[in-house]
Image (cartoon, rainbow, N blue to C red; front, side, top):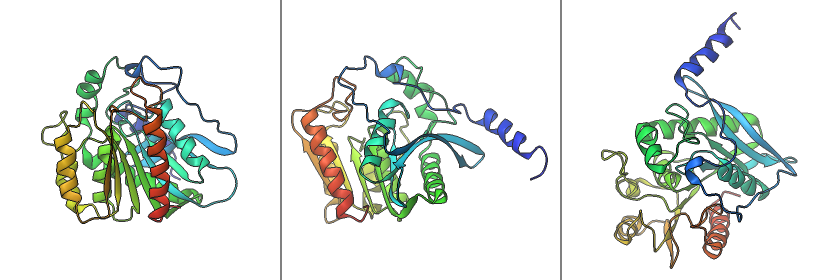
Length: 283
């Protein structure tokens, strides 16, 4: 290695990437954190933060996988609006306990740290509006490459699982990467994102989605109207993708740390997620 190269790369990363480590605990804007929040032990796992190479530097990611055996089928875990905070880390551990290599890259790393912002509106205005879909797809590609390089992840059995902001990304990434075997979108926005009126909608790429995607949606979702779900169902008709709608539940029904949590819908969705991945070659 040429002298100074590593130091120069580190300096470049500090200049161009605003987030160099993952949030500790839950994002401020997600408060109040409910006592019901689930904590999954890392016993029997290799779990924690890593630095993942991307064009121009590195970004932090959380990864978890079983301590023994491998390589394991691989699940990309795509963050909520709140970034890779404690809930998303816990989801990675839950998935790892099922026998997967799970990795959640911090996809806002170039634009800013949302964990300290006070409201969802601030998160949209200050960070999310600046995050392009092309950047996200590229960073998820980098996560696949990173996982492959560890020797612990079998990326020929690749799935993607995303929530809220990340639920929309599931549809977009499934259209982007034909190597994905299956995806699960938890209450992912389907129409044009309000933070970017020129952004791509999930509905508009539905015909290009070749991997089967399972959409898990809420009948009382204040962000995703029934008309959008109906439109998406029309677009995926004839494909292997499916949409399930839970009655009498709200957006964020799997977010066990929030008042929107619905144990019945969350547990059924988790069961369906596992079956979907097994049925479609991610096992």
